[in-house]
Length: 137
Image (cartoon, rainbow, N blue to C red; front, side, top):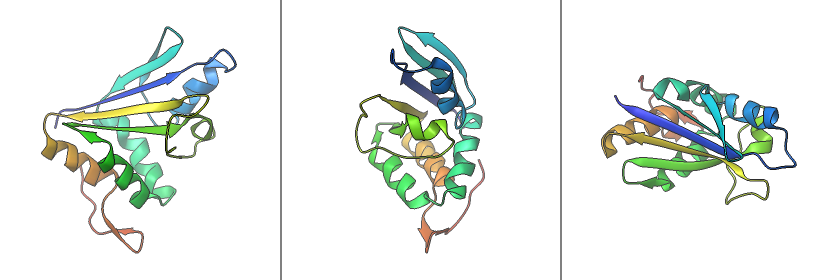
């Protein structure tokens, strides 16, 4: 399955670049580049494995699933993570752009079916907070 992941976060003048890098790398092990005061990186399905694990550890599968599904446009799902919370290794999906900026994530697949499979793998449907079915990708 051909999946691409893109992450982007602005580094504001009041922020320490290393902390913004850490916030991203806590969930997405990608090589980061600094361009015009923004850190960006690209990866593949493997770069989502940490996020997959952390969604289960933090027991936020239902929330994540709604965010991922609501962020679909075409064959891409877009969502944001709170940069400050990510810096300490926790997940938080802000409702909008934050004052210091968010971590912007895009997950793209070759087609809608593949994208939905990735979302089902990352955040499956649940009953009483437990996944109905876990799939392997």
